[in-house]
Amino acid sequence: RVALMIPTLIGMTLILFCIVRFAPGVAGGGGFGAGGAMQNRQARQAVEKAMKERLHLVDAKGRPIPLPMQYLRWLADSVTGNFGESVQYNEKVVDLIKERLPVTIVLNLISSFIVYLIAIPGGMLAAVKRGRFFDISWNFVTLALFSLPIIWVGAMMVGFLANPRYLGWFPAEGTHATSTEWMTSFDYARDYLWHITLPVICLSYSGFAYLSKIQRASMLDNIGMDYVRTARAKGLSERVVITRHVFRNSLLPMITLFAGIIPGLLGGSVVVEHIFSIKGMGDLMLTATLARDLPVVQAVAFIGSIIALICLLITDICYALADPRVSYE
Image (cartoon, rainbow, N blue to C red):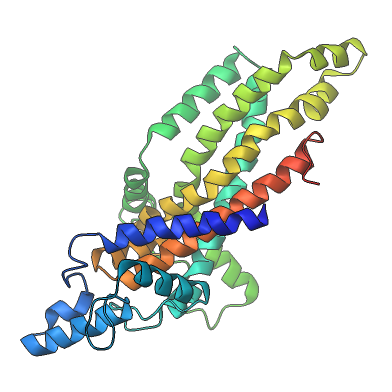
């Protein structure tokens, strides 16, 4: 399965390469960021030629490079971590990623933990109390949360919860205070958690609303199975039946969804990080796309593809741990 990740990654990179290369303006020399600000026509042409060489569109003499060779060169550079230099920031892309990737990863890991922490118990309790007040109320709340767009929720949080004119409970931007030299480790951690509270809520609320419904449906499917009636006939308590038998089998759909929730949260980070001015991968991807900073766009998308494949591998491993019928020997 690890070996299968290699051709999968090649296919993903081929799709990514085609999308970027055939985007309007790329082949014609547009979309090279700061090069458009040059007043001298010859200087601008020199900048565009350098950018084309950086993207392997032309060789050192200005001759066009065939598309297959462009792809092979870009893939070889990406695999070795040589993503080139950013047009917008005039820095190495790998340095930008090293700076911003940990920010996004931490935010998404915390959000994923909260999503599963709320979704699994909520879905279990709603299934056990099917048709009762908690089930109806929980379904109403989760459906309402799932229907709220992230961009609107984030704007309302900044406008009310982070606005000193109203509540002003939380900071409106960043992941820490501007000056942290005086802080102890405890103060720094507390300040960090205070800053990321609103972004984490923004990333989490729709996720646990969706997963909770999946958990409830899976629990209800398993409660009616023959093995549950057999366990009850043996005299096992309802708590043991639900927690040891029904719950374990109902986890399989949740494990399946794990392969998509992390990449989904990474996609949501584009909006959330921009709203709260967090310097992470999402904000980097958005600014690079608007500035047509192609080396950064390609690198961020390549990293996202690798993360998605890692999540799929973790999902396969969790299958074997949760279901004894699954074996990869």
